[in-house]
Image (cartoon, rainbow, N blue to C red; front, side, top):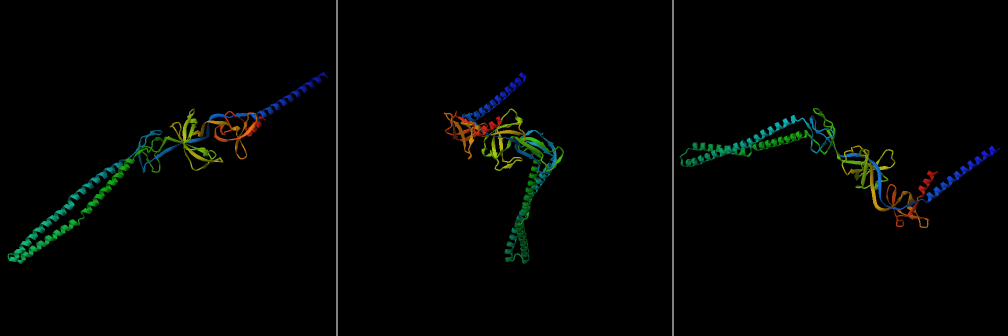
Length: 408
C-alpha cells in the first residue's frame, strides 16, 4: 500500500513540474513578445553610403587584328606570343624579292623615258626651226636676185628667159619657206612630248604603288598592346581573309556589368566603383562608371530587364585578364553626418507613405511621417525635423511578426 502511495506522489510531482515548465515557457514567450513589441531602436548620426552590388566581366576595349592586304609568304616572325609591342613596331616580314626587282626595273624604265623626252625636246623642234631659218635665207636670196634682175630686164640687160628662171627660183624658195613654217607651226613634236611626259608620270605612279606594296610587306602593329594570337608560320603562305596577329591593349581594359531595372535609375556616369575578385584576392581596386547603355537586354532566367554599363579601371592591373569575372560595389550616393536608423524601424502605410513610431518622453508611441534619403546596407537616412538624433523608435510591425514566427 505504501509503495502505491509513493508512486502516486512521484507522478503528481512530475505533472506539477511539467506544468510549471509549461507555464514558464508561456510566460517567457509572452515576455519576449512584449519586449519585441516595444524594443527600441535609436536614431544615430553617421556617414552613410548607398551601394549596388553586382558582378562584371573584364573586356579589352582596344584590340586589333593585324593583316596584310594580299597574299604572300612569311619570311620572318619578329615577335612572340605574349610580347608587349608599341604602335608601328615591326612584328613580321614577308618575302619581297619580286617587288624589289619590279621597283628596280621601273626606276630604269623611268630613267630611259626621261632621256627620250630630253632628246625630243632638244632635237624635235630644233630641226624644224633650222629648216625654217634656212628656207628663209634662201627665200631672201632668191628675192634679191629676182628684184635686181627685174630692173636689168627693164633696161634690156637681162633676157626674158633668164628673168623667168629667176622667178621660178624665187617661187620655189617661197614654197619651201611656207612649208617649213607650216611644219613648225603644226608640228606633232609638241603632242609627242606631251605623250612622253604622261608616260613618265604613269610610270612614276606605278613606282609609288610598288614602293607602297613593298612597305606593306613589313608588318607593323597598329596599336600599343600585347600579342595574344599569332596565326602565321615562317616560310608558309597565308590567305587574305585570315588575320596574322591579334593584339590587345590590356591597359585599356574595361568591365561590363548588368544593372537591373530596379536599380539603373540610381546609376550615373562618373560614380565610384569598388572592385574585388578571385584574381586579385586581398586587394580592392577602384574604378568609375564610364557609360550607361541607352537600351535594355534580357537575361535568361531573369524576369527583370537589365541595362549594360561599362566601368573603367583607375589603374592598370595585369592580373585582371580578359574574360575574368569580378565583384562590383557601385557607390550611388553618400552623405556625411546624417540621421539614420536601421531599416526595421521604417513602416509604410497603404499609400506607400513612410513613417516611424517614436517613443515620447511619457513612454507613449507616436506616429511620425518621414522621408527616406540615402539607403545603406543596414541603415537608412530619415529626413524629418521632428525626429532627432538619440530618439527611440519602435521596430515596425513586419519585423515584429517575423521575430514571433521564428520564436515559435
